[in-house]
Amino acid sequence: MSHLTEIIDNHNNLDGVFSIVKHYGVSAEFVTDALVQRFEQIQKNDDESEDNTQEEKAYCDEILNTLNQYYARL
Image (tube, rainbow, N blue to C red; front, side, top):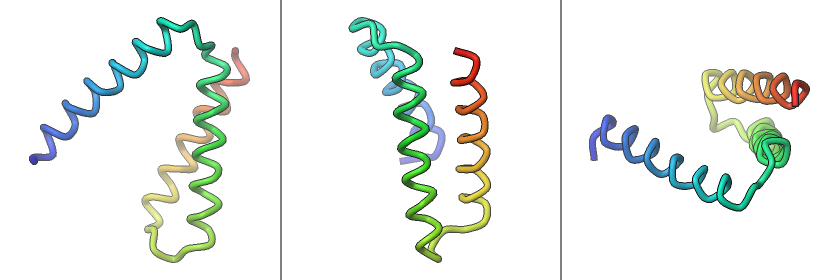
């Protein structure tokens, strides 16, 4: 599968997930908190493992920072 196809499929899948989340009225606070917790767990596991690159660690730091800022605004 090409990288472009993966990107498009992922966007379609995310749209589907968020349709379900919206349908059931799940709050943005809950979704944001769940994502923060999961990325923090990934980051903790990454710290214990040497398999991940600096780029992956930087990505995780960046998304956590953005999600925490968004959560603070809610």
